[in-house]
Image: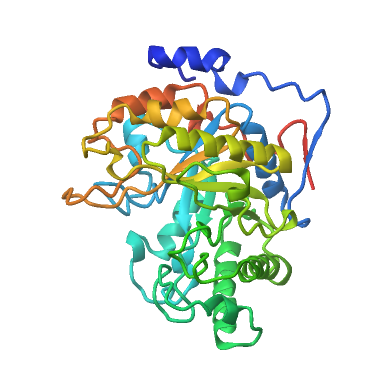
Length: 400
């Protein structure tokens, strides 16, 4: 059982949140009525429905901490199962494992390369490892451009999505084959009992920006919505993938509104989880505004929500110095009472010679490590050991 160990300035803000055991915290009064949630896939597996119910319920207690690629490599290591930069700092794994599925989908699939510092088999093993500990898995997809063959950030041709939506076209058939690859991979992801592992899948993330071939520079609103709906319909109805929770994740770095989060919204019946990528740096006021709006939208639509990417490269201040109290000041304090299910830091690139600063999560060589332990010890942050059984239906919640 975790002990609460937080700096004095946090006590005034945490009010009654600081109990000795997170899992014993009282639930908010729901007037004794059972909550009903809806997944877009009515054939979702029992474990997927259970995870969805727990994503909703955990929001009232605190938020899960996640790290992208954090089981595949770290600042000074790679390809060592059982390791984690987070674990080396706080002796616990993140509650959420974020991973990229693009390399097992597109034309890199058969290249034989250890792309992005991880092979297909390593990704599979990491997903299973996380699930076997009871953790939550979420996956993005930095897919290569199916028209040009270049990477996800090739926005040189604004007809790519238009061609994907032309049934039977060369680009359409290529994209569909990539979805087939995804379906094959996902169907092979099984837990210890042989059940399909639920995945929070967030394709076409940061679609509000211009840099990706699916972003606002290369697509009209109708094209983006068509691409989203085609993807969901094909995986659900044609490939019978029943273990996906579909997450949308616009990027908001500056202060925005609820309408900004709903940019090119594909419809309530096509979204399960409302995410938000937020690289706000040290603009804490912006972060607070956007998280407040995200939390309100979650409540309005009765869909769980979370910060699906965030962080500062190198965990540094604007002057380049290390930000030693970053975790409690910039991450914990703004999220108190905001009702979000998770916050996921971007990756710690494997860089054993420390040639750069491409890391967003904690690691033992950074001066913010001790502050991260304070963050870890908070009653409202959830790590692997804090999680309830995320794969059994939460009490008082129904999912259809």
